[in-house]
Image (cartoon, rainbow, N blue to C red):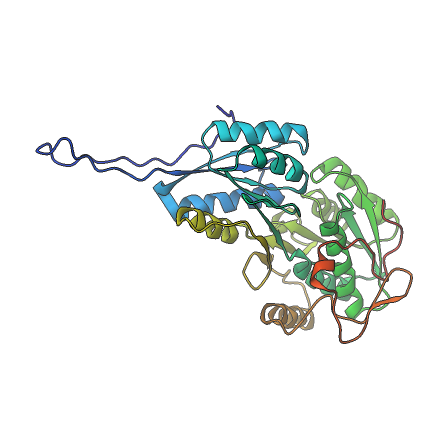
Length: 360
C-alpha cells in the first residue's frame, strides 16, 4: 500500500429488515481515482492547486468515489512504478499531473487498456488516455498588461523551469501584454531546469534583479520569487495559486488554476459511463484559469484595463496572440488581423520581440 495515501471516504451499506435476510441493499462500487503529483502539496503552487481539485472531486461525489495521491514523484522511470502501484491498489482512473509523466503514462496505459488515464500538459493520447492543458497564456497576458504599466525601468524578469512550449507560450504572452501598453519593455529569463526548487528560484530571481529587472514573473512553483521581491521592495506575480500572503506589497496579482472544474467534469463522465479520450484545452471561459486578487495599490486605470481585457478573453472578443506580432528578430510572424493558429500555440518554440537572450 502507498505510504502517502489520503484517508478514504467510506459509505456503509445498510441491511434491509431481518425478515428478508437474503435481500441486502448493494451499494454501487466506488470509483477509485489516483493522482500523481510532481512536487510537494505544501500550501501553494502547482501541486497544491491540483490537490484542491482532488478535494473538489471528493466533495462533489462523496461516497461514490475514493481518491488517493502520491506527491513528490520524479518525472521519469520512478513515475512508471508509482502509476503501476496505483493500479495494483485498485485505481480505475489516474490523473498524472505533469509534462514529464507523459511517456510513462502512455507505456503503462498500453499494458492496462481497461484503466482510464488523464495526462496534464502532454500531447500523446491513446484510446484510454486523454490529455488536458489550460490556456494559461490568457492569464499571463493580463499579468504582462499590469507589468507594463507598473515597471519603473522597463525591464521584466521571468524565472523559467524547462524550455517546453507551455513555458515559452506563457513568456511570450506576458511580454506581449506588457508591450501592448509599454513598447519600451524588454524581458529577460533565467532557466533553472526544475519546476520546484526554492533555492534555485530565488537565485534566478536575484540574477534577474542584478540585470535590472524590477518586475518578476515565474513559471515555477514555490513562493521564493514573490518573497524575494517583497524583501527588495520590487514587484512580482505568483503562479498556479494565490501567493499574496507571501508578499502583500510585491504581489500585484497571479495566474491561478482551478483544476477542480476539470476533475469534477471528467470524474462525472467516468461515473456516468461517458468518458472518452479527448484533447482538452480550457481557459478563463471555463473557469479553470483565474487571476489572484489584484493588489489594492494598483491604479484604477490599470484595474479597469485588466478587467476589460479579461472579459474580452472570456467572451472571445479579445485574443492575446492577435497580430501584428514580431518575433525576436523583428520579423512580422503574425500579420495584423490574424492570430497565431491554434495548433501552433501548443507547439510554440519561438520568442516574441522584446525578449532578450536565447532559449537553452
